[in-house]
Image (tube, one colour):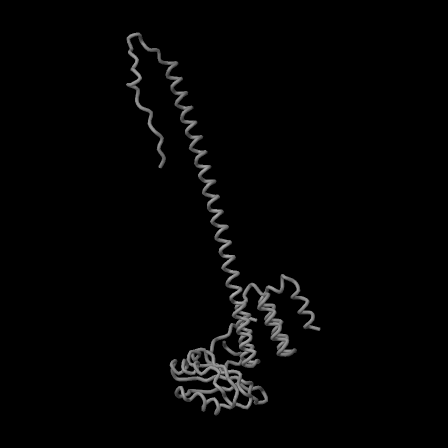
Amino acid sequence: SCRELMSSLFESKLYKEQTRLWLEFVRLELRYGTVEHTRRIFQRGIQCSTDDPELLIQRFLEFEMIHGTLESYDNAALKCRRQQKKLEEKRAKEQLQREEKNSKKTENKKTENKKTESSKKTESSKKKRKLSSDKTSTESKHHKPNSSEVLPSPSQFPKKPQSCYIILSSDGEVEKSRYHLTVFVSNLSYSATEDHLNETFRTVGEICDIRLVKSPNNKSRGFGYIEFHTRDQVMAALDMDRVKILDRPCYVSECKEKDRNAG
């Protein structure tokens, strides 16, 4: 089956580390399979992916908000926090190793440069001494002192110088310009209506609009959008996260544009 084929594909290290392939597996399972199998794929994916695990963790939590229960969401959030901590520890260790390696390379390079510079100075000094010696020898050959010349005493010779060196949805429920004034409400009972949402959230202020997302047969899909007039009302609505509507806790989160290229 397609599920078995995809599972065998992820036995290879080359594929199981790619977040994009895990998200494709999730999409296929969610469309043709079950919620439980999709949840297992997410749990396996966040353990294996290495190129962009944060994206997979984000999609996992969004999946639980829409398709899961309060308990499954809490479990998912706990697993994601643990995996995030492991990722941070691993990255910190890798960063430390890179810094130590770079430091060692830099130190070796400095040592090599010093050796090269010292070798060049030694070679230059030898050439100067040889030229000076050749010059002195040549001058001695051509110069014959007169008997009247008086050689200077050793004390009169000059001193030798020292060396020196120098979340948008597919059918466009929310206009982009209104994101900051809109909250996303999910995990709703399928029996919940716009009136139930209005009755619950009108306590934070006047509501501009309520859009409950429905299927083609006009049945609620269990989530929707509530638009307010001010940002303060939005923040107050976010504080109502997990408020019960028809005895079912609902999730309240900010409305964000979803990356169309992801997954």
